[in-house]
Length: 277
Image 1 (cartoon, rainbow, N blue to C red):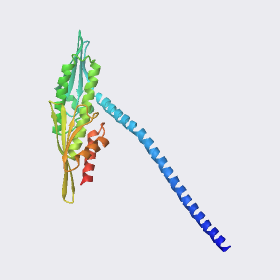
Image 2 (cartoon, one colour):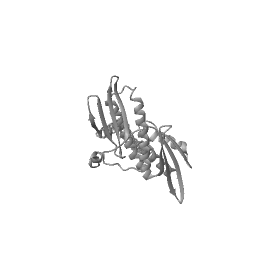
Image 3 (cartoon, one colour):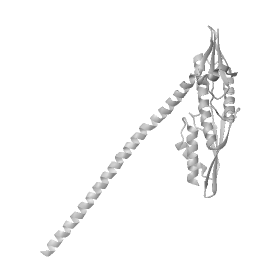
Image 4 (cartoon, rainbow, N blue to C red):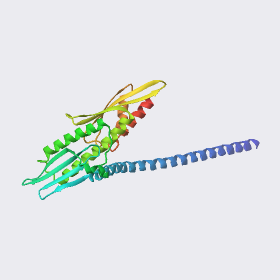
């Protein structure tokens, strides 16, 4: 009889232990289920966020372009002759487009080395944007090349005056965005900004430095930026005492084209250099 009672107590203890284990498993399962739900929500939000981010960047670019289009003003209008003037805030010069109507349609003559009118000094729309000399020089050379190309293609491109005016506005607005971004990066890092006439490519050389325990670690990055920036991938050459192959993969993964593309790339390089030091 005592043996049976002992067996019963032992079974009761085992049952109590199993019930406690089952309760722990249940609680752990509930936590895992909650974590899974939270993860699924995060994934869903991430899927929704990426298209919204792309759409926001696109709308921001369009907004900036539209804001800069206000710099255009009609200077002279006749039945067969129209002159459009575009003030550029980072230079003393202005773009002047002259449209002449012929029997074959409108012909566009463009020039941009015309000085601004004296009374524009008090015009809030044309207040100067202060950029470093090397940045202004590159932007001016790019504008020279663009205007020269515009004169060549406008005769045969079939573009209307409205389309040409919008194209010039878009080009100049992108130059202004590039100028601002390059200026900020040159203030953060030692570097040099240049323009290649033969390849129509901008070159930005930056030196990234991080010191740890009196040891200096460096990466030199040379960004090759074409005229479609910031909407197409940038070619970059990396040198330094780090795993450049891994860094290139991180740049492809974490620095996507769009407004601020160069800045994001530099942030990735800086973070990688600190982590590798």
